[in-house]
Image (tube, rainbow, N blue to C red; front, side, top):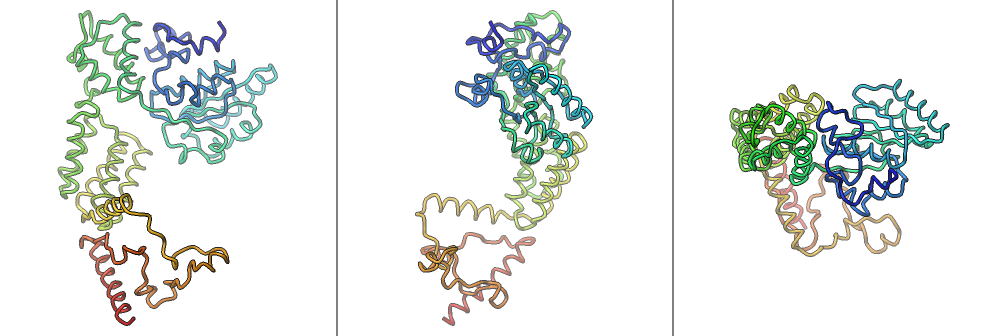
Length: 446
C-alpha cells in the first residue's frame, strides 16, 4: 500500500504509536495520527469534498495558514500534507528561529529541488515572526521553491503580513468537541492498558481539556502514572493527579456561567471589590483569560457606553496587554479594566437603542432612502432628483442644518437614543436638546 492509500484508509486503524515517537515520548506524540483516518475532528476541513481533503486527494498543496487554538491538530495536518506529496518537511519554530534559520531552510529546499524533491516549510507560531522575518519567505513562496504552511493561534488578519497572507489560504481549525475528546481517551486507554475512568472522572477530564487534545492526553497520562494499581480511575485520583490545574467548574456548566454573571452584574452595579473578586474566581477556576477579556469588552460597550467612551478603549487595551504578556502578568491589566468599568458612570442607552432599531428593521418594510440623501455620481442620477436640495451641514450656521430630516418617510421624528444623563451622556443630552430646539425653531419659521 503506498503512502496515499494509507493516508486515506476508509476505516481508522486500532490505536498505535506514531512511527516517529519513541516509547518514552509523551502520550500525545505517541498517538499523533499517521493517516487521515486517524485524525479526530476538523471534519469541516477534512470531510469528503472539503478544502483540505480535496488538497490531500489532488496532491496539489497550496501554501496555507492553519489558524486555531492549541492542541487541535495544526502540526499533525502539516505533517500529513508532507506525507501526501512525499516532500521534505522542514520545521521552524517562530519562538526560537530567526532569519538565519530561514536562510538555512531555503538552502535545504534548493538542495531538495536539485534532487527532484519538493519541500514544505512549516512554521509553528508564525505570528511570533516579525515583519522582516515573514517577508523573508515571500520570494521563495512566489517562485515555488517550497510550499509554506504556517500555524498560529492568533488571528492572521492582524498577526501575519498582508503580502504573505495574500499568498496563502487560511483554514480555521476548531476546538475538539467533547465526543471527539472521548474518542481520543478511548484510544489512549487502549494504548496504555489503563483501568477505566468513572463517568464523573471522564466528564471532568474532558471538561478540563477544553477542546485541547494535547492537554487531555498530558493530563490523562499523568493520571495513569500516579494512580497506581487501581480497578478504576475516579475523581479523587483525578484531583490528586492534576491538583490546582483541574477546573473547579465544568466548562459550560452552571457554576461557570454563574461566575460570569456575578462578574458582569458586579461591574454593572458599580462594586469594584466584588467585580475584582469574581474576576479572580473566574481565572482561578480555569477560565481562559482571553474569554474574560472578551466579556470585559462587552461590558464596556453594553453597560458603560457613551457615559464614558474611554472605558471601551481601556477594555480593548487590557485585552491587548494580556495578549502581549500572557499569564500571570497580563491578568493585572484585566483587573484594572474591571475596576475602572465598575467605578465609572453607567449607561445602556446605546445598547437599548441598537436593540430597538434592529428589531424595527427586522420587522419593518424596506423604506426607501429620501431623494435628497441619495448618492448622485452620474448625470442620470442627478436628473432623477438624487441629492437635490441636500443641505451641506458644514455650510450652515453652527455647522448644523436645522430642520433637515434624515430618517425615511414614516419614521420622521422617531427617537431611538435617549442619553442616560450620567457622565459624558449628560453633556450629550444637553447637546441634543440644543439641536432639537434649533429644529423646532426652523420648523416654526417655515
